[in-house]
Image 1 (cartoon, one colour):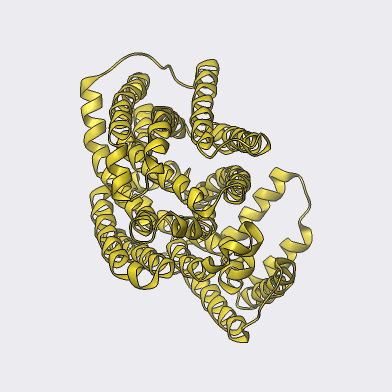
Image 2: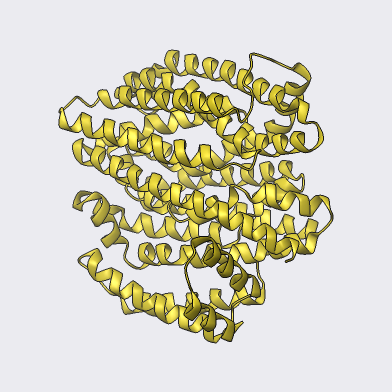
Length: 509
């Protein structure tokens, strides 16, 4: 078995676990959002989203990019200097704890000014309350990032993907059942984040993945911050790309329109779920290949993984792109129906982000984090400019267009840089063929201009589309030997007999 195949098997196993946890988390998250959206007015739902968006900006700054830096740094220390691992993690926790407290105080005392910017008085109270969740959220992110350096997925899945969404849903249901006021939603958010942190902290302490001590190593801290700052700036710029549309809609159009738009955005962000799931263990698996100079093996991992991610994402994208009105109506109700066009535009942007693969993460692996920062900043600037130009004219459709264009730009820049440095790109011949087939079939169905009153009518059409698509993929012989090897590994792990599927695939390899 080649190094590329071994890496793909490990990534696939981790991806499967992370994906299951992510789907679970998103499902419960959607239920919670749907309850909040239905329980309160669109304006109140918009205030809630604005408050969490601003809190998320604070979280990016408070964590200093450690979420992306720690997995690599912990893995490196474990290999080269194992005695420094505990000091590294403890130093990171102390730095983030202090920084998050400072940001929390800024949000509390600056809440009036922030509310004036968005012309939304209700933001004052909302920010003063949710700010208390910031230290808990930041420390939780650091602990989970450190566990990634040990090649673990348990902390991410069990606690961030299962415990927190279930707890949050229970609290939201309690709020609705008790008919509590809108302001109560912010207090229960703080409660959920704090409980999540303490449960995770005591679990890490119990199983002793690493020792958490009150120890600050200035040298380690300086090196970590120096490496992480570009990643933090990347995170801020990436956040601008993701959330500027929401913030600028709040500024130009008000919280009512923000609430409408936030029926489309959480749905569109489902599209990169397979990409982000595969990204969890990707650095740990391909970094050794890069260190050993096995660029061709790394390229093979990149190409096969990108093809898998595209094929898995296609059904979700097809449903949103072909039947956006039906999807919006199913999840959020008829009052959010005008967000259908925005969903369609956002789906295109996020699908483009998905089909080029893990270009940004690959650049970080090869020590090109500064370029990732530059490309993301450029795209963020484009995003702000386009939002300022398009939102006053086109509202939520303009915001969606700005976001889609910014994702297009950053992915093109990252992919070009990755190819320039390593000659790595996602477009193997067996990936190009499924791409071409999907474009043609999507164009045909879109041209039919089908209108589905219910999602239960849309799903059979989607099933037929995917069946025809799978047939053409097989006939075009777009199956790689790694695909069959992965299927064999899944078969062995699940203890099931996939004989018919194996025989079909082997005929078309």
